[in-house]
Image 1: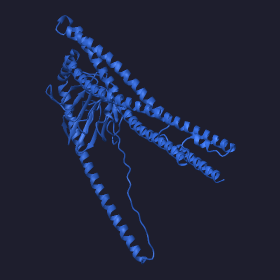
Image 2: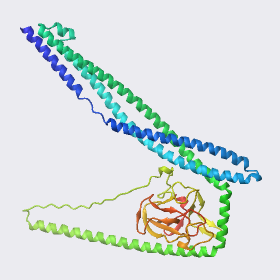
Image 3: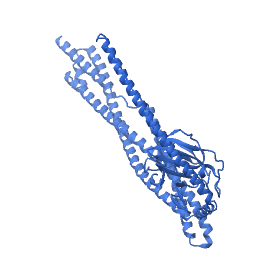
Image 4: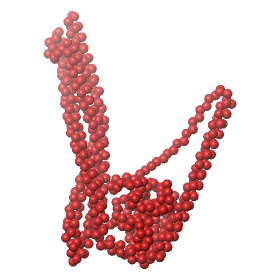
Length: 485
């Protein structure tokens, strides 16, 4: 009888141990993300890889085309009889290099997105792998605890359990228990093997992502370098292009024919700007005085409110208590334009005003007896390109009255020669001016953020062709924009 009771206690202890270990295994670590989310992230990375691969193929095609055109240009450059063929090849090469630059910009943007996605995926994978390893280790510990519980219960094997049966009924009960324990052990081991497979698969995926990341970073730097080289090549081609040289000569002749009118327009416009500058300074001074006045009034109001509350508290003789909460909340937002799509690095607080078009056809300085106060930005296909705010500020002047949107040999007189234009006050004495637009889409008094669209490139005012005239002024004095953008 004692033997039977002892045996039943051992079986009961063993059963409790098995149940406990099964319970511990059931409480495994939950996955960090759903399969659907992981699949969506993976698909996004795959789609971006396709875009990057497509861009690489296109760049390779353009490189081959450039190589053929370079050979054609070199073979005809010293042959007078092939001058026309040489110039045709130069013009075609200008368009090809421009297309290469734009393709590189798209590819660079895609690579930067891909790098960011891979870095995020790697961070998540490292956490998943760490948790998977913990899950496996916990499973192994649980299995060891199950075996230990079996040993502590006095049974080192399933055979010992069956041999210790007191009768046939007891044996049947133990056989059923052994069967369930064996099924549990098999499930536990299969689960650990499956976890091991998932762990190894995730590790392989992590290493593949790390390899892709390093490859993409290297490719990104190579493409940025190539992008810079292509921009330099484009400038060299412009210098060799007879079409550009002829345009310069036409511009000079047009200026000489209209010199007096143009100079007068510029003088009048400059006088208007100086007047506007003084007006703006007076407005700012008045606004500052009003701001200080309001601050002083608010300070006095708060002091009066505090005095009134103190008086009220004294009148209550300490029999009542009051609480007062005063606070000022502000909600300010700031937005910025990402210039990464154009592989452009800001030199200062200002950014390039016509993203994607980089050639300066005219710079600041004396030209044909007159001083050019800004830079003229021109590249093939620039007509209709978006003009963007070089920095955050307030539009203080807009002119949209010029309808003469075409290249001309003389000034139409609109906007003091600037045609449709706008001026932005960026604070601290800085202004920027954007001239010759088809139209300006902003209004006077409008607040704009860096990169916001102001209008589109055209040829209004005194303009021999589509381009943007861009100026930077400090305290009313024209600066060289090339020092800022």
